[in-house]
Image 1 (cartoon, rainbow, N blue to C red):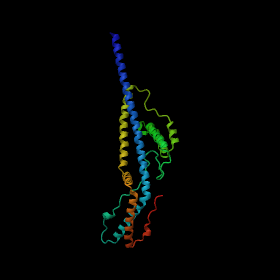
Image 2 (cartoon, rainbow, N blue to C red):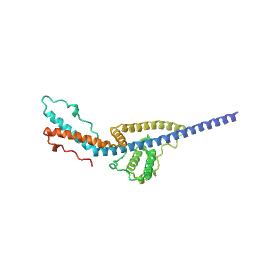
Image 3 (cartoon, rainbow, N blue to C red):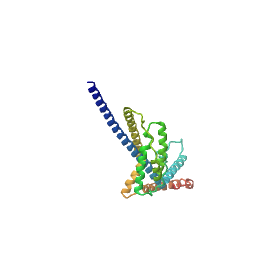
Image 4 (cartoon, rainbow, N blue to C red):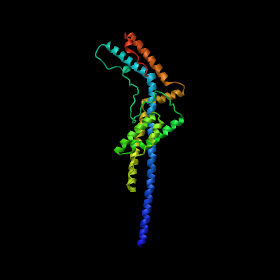
Length: 280
């Protein structure tokens, strides 16, 4: 009887261990998939920022200086008209209200991301670009700061990802390969029991879900920005055989000519309102 009990206990224990092993395998696979997805989202976020930056450099070179000059002329016209108006000062009419300035300022929100050369296409082959992209994804999957909740390890990962982002922005394949040679920091404690590791993995999966949601929200925010929408409109225009920036240039120049004529009639010396030069 005792032998049968021991045999039954042994079988139950093996069954529990087998169940725990299967659950661990499933959780580890899910964790790796989420890390891979985070790396893909990080790359998409990075490339979206770069795309917006490159488009806005082109925008400011071709249109931005005209838009700035147009605002200057509008302000001057309002000032002149107000100075000639009798009675108490009133709020500016809607036609001369200050418009939102549509210029792009780089923000270093991505751990060391730096400016891409103005409008230059990549000088590297598609094969090399693919290698660079794949390496970035691999490194983001391994070293992204959001993949840990430990403060010390997070700080170390941030330093590594700064170098990764700088190398990716510079298209420095050699530097990316060197970073790939770095050992990963251990995440899971080797002294954990299976039950403890299962609990830790479940907690980590929930945390990574929040990281994924945050990255998606940041990408969506960029894709809803005026700069991105203008770029998309520009692409649609090109498909129909026209150029949005050229149309905007012509429109601003026409408005500038009308305002300059109006100001000259009012006796304004336009030499004091020199048009800004194009961004170089």
